[in-house]
Image (cartoon, rainbow, N blue to C red; front, side, top):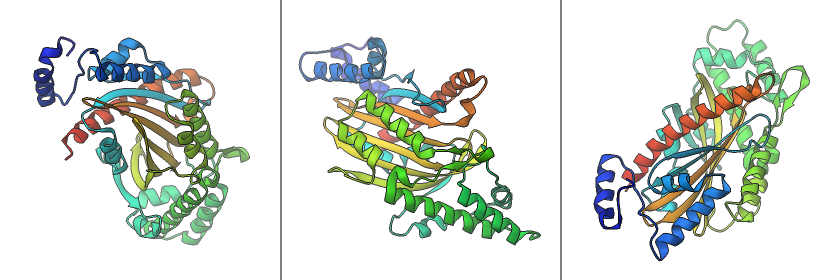
Length: 350
């Protein structure tokens, strides 16, 4: 790709599109191309990405870098890559669940209608094995439940004691749990997220994990201040052009089958476009996750600077630094594989 000069740009671009779905940008030239490349370099500079790696992104490569964690439980990673679609089109693809559909670990998912969340979640059916696992839930790091939710499951366990088939009543209870968490978050934002009960009376403040991730993103300054105000104060002060969608997802995370509630939102931020995925409830395996995508228009499509911050208890305690290093590498590899598929699918979209 680096051998392509300006005269060969169109030919190289066509061949590469046919062969690999990658789109190189030619070297700096007077006018808008040079200005675009300066903007791209400044964007990645804020993320700690070297000028040479920024050039690699402009040439169609994936670049990965680590970010400073915002708290001791966080795995944080950045990806930079090029997509052959316009920023708003790619943002809409993400809002329409492109990344969820393309993820091989997604078992099933559905869109939640804020006016009728119960109907969307009617499709969620637990197996007998999964139902018994939910019913056996106790306070601790193995499952993410509030004190109230654990009490409700304990009461249901007593009620169903001795029954051979429990999948349907437990499925109903889990659906009610998810609907209540959805309503609380969609009404109150971060303040509406119930903490997870841990052993010994300790709690994990899932809301605080997302708040620290949002403050760390704000410190990088890729977007105007009102964008970060939205992350922190949602659902207040939604800006012009704001769009959102809610999903429930049955997912396989690190070998664990988990349920999650996801909020996707996007905001035009000229000349860029901001897209956010926030997993504000995850039933097990990790705590919460927030990813931000800064979508910057260039001649050949969109430069994406994607940051992901995932909270997990598995990187705390003795040996936490080593586990964080391994976990970050695994997370980065998984995300790169996912977004390679997403890039190919986005380029094929009408």
